[in-house]
Length: 465
Image (tube, rainbow, N blue to C red; front, side, top):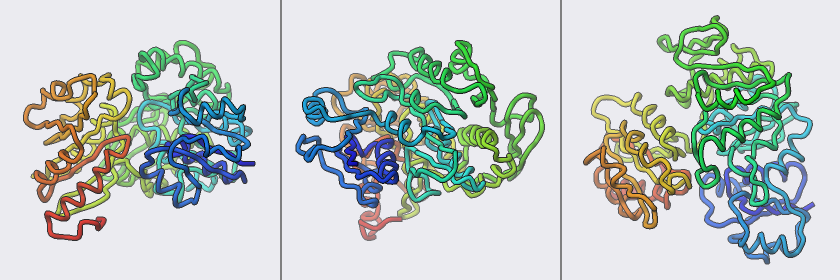
């Protein structure tokens, strides 16, 4: 059976392609403008990818076309699929029907932290000897690939609230039927799909309707949006968590004591951990509590989960240090929502020593950012940075400079990525930490900036660090 994935370069579709091949299917795909890490993954795995959406790529006709949610009516390949009557489905439907059926699904949902928490939960289960299947919407550094079928009953999946396909506007996660569900947080995002937070809350309410009564729902204490979701109906036991709190009845908590992180459940300390550097920051303590609680539901004792935290290597593009040039450290991060931007910068700021500057380079690329949904929160999100360089390409329907005005001279706006790269290379000095934040390729800025810095330092422009 031959399966062709349209939009194969996405962070969901590329891992799905690997699962399809592991099922024994012949897999191909098409996309345009692929970028790392998924472009590298597909090339390394030898999955053929056609550039663009020429209907000729559908010859000979595949047995099934899996259509990614980035494609809409009017796309030449989509129109060809419909006109020729080719069998087609959505990515989440394919995953649910061919991979998740009959499995114990542990789903990680929420606005922020899904990728890291999914990777961490899979890592904990792996270290516990459970050999889980998983699909992570990024490249976990502890595994050779972002997805696999696994050997046991457990399957960990990143459960995105974005729509399933042009013909199925339900959130992806409604296909997954989890037994263990993490709802990490909830804010308004994906403004191109959801007009307001209430619309996302409705999708989460529908998700809760699919969790069995012998399952488990895990969520943070005090999240007003998630509490509204629960108030609409929940038929499943609920466990709540709160980071940086002392042991409290009815809660998962954690508290730092020196180098040790004390993990507690229901008022009693149940484990001690020394989490890896990849789990630094308050937002990561939030994520790890959720993962430990979910792992316990799958039978992993908290002490075993705590031991796994110490070796967790992290995820690519999550504050990933990718080069050091002349004492200047460069990081790649996927943050594209103000909450995530603030969390990333806050986590790194806490690690810096005296005299070390934090420079934020941001591409407001997500649909919500491009539409200006978060413009009033942009300057506060960048507050932890000593300098903020922001790419504002022509065509944005809002004034980026005006939004950044509260930062004064610490913020600069650029219409072109090359101008931003030149400015960053000129102002950077030894001891600086430059964080490049985008949910896309940032117009190739990562390697361009590294090359400029190496040239300035008199070294080979093409070397990695």
